[in-house]
Length: 433
Image (cartoon, rainbow, N blue to C red; front, side, top):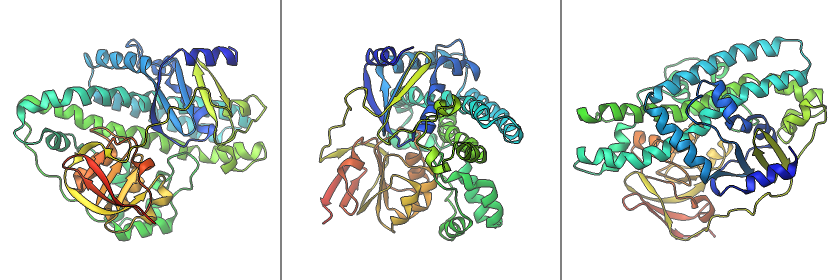
């Protein structure tokens, strides 16, 4: 398929801004084609209509096709008629365990590194059906949850939803914290969990010193408030809890796999005469074909009917969000707090958050938790009822407003802000000098 046909196919669809993710070319070219029907079928999700035949990313913005989102929402509804969300967790576990065996053998094999990269690419793509499915999940549950829950609730239904959606299962970051707090030697924790720090495939792993410092500031999470769930809501609450767990589990497993494969990628970079860090800006397909090609940070990626192109120019005009002074969002946990705003876009920036600050992020990650423990409130651009920020806010009992869409664009580091999570509004009281 020619570049013109790919671009023409993408341009026929209606796109909306979805999320900001500053990925490099390598991760995009290795993983993003995994959202196609082919890979949904490979992981055991055939027969429901899942899959996207088109995708668009213009650094750092990921777009969502309105038409394809509707199609996958209908597929999800069809899937739920005969399955539980737990079935997806089980499927993901199977993929992850198989991939661990395969990547271990691949690293030991004597195949040429271009061939190893081709196999690695196929394994990475098996995670993307699970990564992309959360969008229709969130949309579906966001719509139906208030209607289902309200008849059972006397007080604030949003607060009740937050309480019943907390998963009893521990994600990997929580397990790491537990080991640090229980006295497991930091060196042992480092060997097991150091890969948790990067969320882009290329950031450095945690050092032993960083984990030792983290341990100093960790506090035992208070026990979640016991909530009596009405009999008529028990099954629904169980589904919400599983979705909350899956939302984090899918990314944890994806980044753990990238951690397992890092030694292979280091050797791939060496084989073409570049550093591991430089590999982030190379198209994996061009390396496999023997003609390595590097792109600028401001690249664009278009995918259509199984093929993709990458170029340094935009494919469609950027769909910039309108930045407004009045910041509104959804209440994840109620309360009011005032403090100095700190914008955190990457785990490497959490050190600037001091006690009492307001943490503002596109979305929070498990590696943000040390900063979240210090902050008095959280504000995010993205998020739904089961997002990480909402979960942690409920666990810590801190005011939190999610899904503002523009908070990180409107608020600046050092602004004095008030988070009114009673009304879902963030006010800038005084701008930073």
